Figure 1 (cartoon, one colour):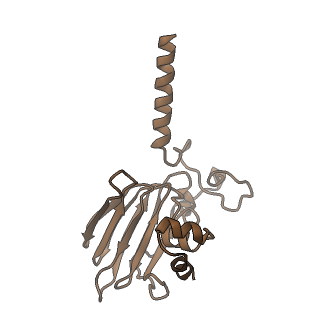
Figure 2 (cartoon, rainbow, N blue to C red):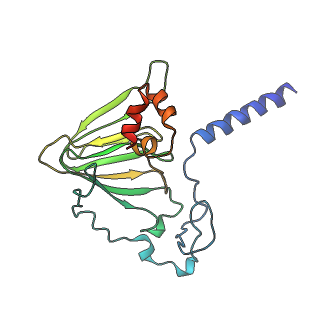
Figure 3 (tube, rainbow, N blue to C red):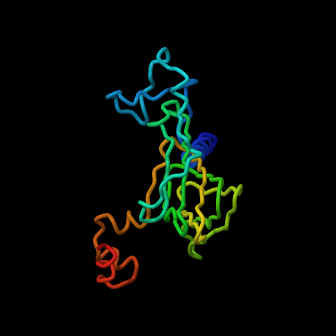
Amino acid sequence: MVLATYFLLVFFEYWSLSQAIASDPSPLQDICVADIHSPVKVNGFVCKDTMAVNADDFFKAANLDKPRDTMKSKVGSNVTLINVMQLPGLNTLGIRLARIDYAPLGQNPPHTHTRATEILTVLEGTLYVGFVTSNTDNGNKLLAKVLNKGDVFVFPQGLIHFQFNPVHDKLAVVIAALSSQNPGAITIANAVFGSKLPNDVLAKAFQVQKGTIDWLQA
């Protein structure tokens, strides 16, 4: 009885740990090219018939070396995604790529990826980047760094992070890779002030007058 209880506890501890570190499911076949036109809904995309797969399913002429327009963005950045919709061969492989261009003083505002760790490499310019740790008794800690061309930084899964171009007269460019086919993105300002969260709730959460929240919501 004691031995059975011990093994049961070990099982549940292992199961809990495996859930905590889980990312996208591991593929069960060599390739599963996304059939994005299939009406069948699954957790991801249905696999295309392997007999219909060709090299173009794993290729995208994305021209990631070309600068992107940042002038139309209110925050001064432009994110170019390479995901399964542009590159069907990515399906089930648990990765995604992005090029991000930053105008002078532009930013990728505080946000979080609920299902992915992100690693970025600076191709051009200078960036001030960082992330915030989870709640603790001592509060939240900001871990931030100024990056230059060729530098690499990683943002752990689920943590709020940002990138900001502090230079007044030069653009910045990065390539970012994420450890999920569909990492999810929650932009903090949009989620909090652009949703329908009650203003009374927000006023108490931020410890400000309701009129301040009304102004921010507007």
